[in-house]
Length: 225
Image (spheres, rainbow, N blue to C red):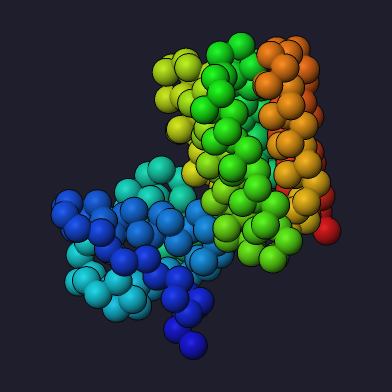
């Protein structure tokens, strides 16, 4: 097995057009956030280049950028490794996420229209199916879509921009607890939709705060297990 240890079929196709270095960066970031590349895993330039079908130069550039952004650690004389988030890092990020998401839920309860509610219901149905079939990758992607849709319905561009900055790290932290949260997470989503339908801003805020807090506690419980 290669030391990068990529699962079969995990390597995303490099989308065209666009600068090669950008496409390699996006591919590696996707592999990290989906945990196809695990925290602490050794990243070998030549092997990653082989997986992606590119030379080592764009891989090296991508790893340097990922290091700057905190996704990868470059260790002298050892090489590159996927960053292992500390408890404090995770706690800070998930706490900020709670603040942003709670406000988004409040605004969504105020502003959501019929088509927006229907979109949430459709994502909910797909999420329930993903959990029932134990499709963790789909459940994680649908969870991100659900929260992104609420952010869209909130109608606050600045709030959406801030949320986008933490979205990928939220996915990174959520992936290992997705199966554990499973059905309960989507029940909480269903209750949140009901509060939004009723236009109950206070209830929507409370439910979203509790929902994101459950995820935060699940993450810490898993790390401590």
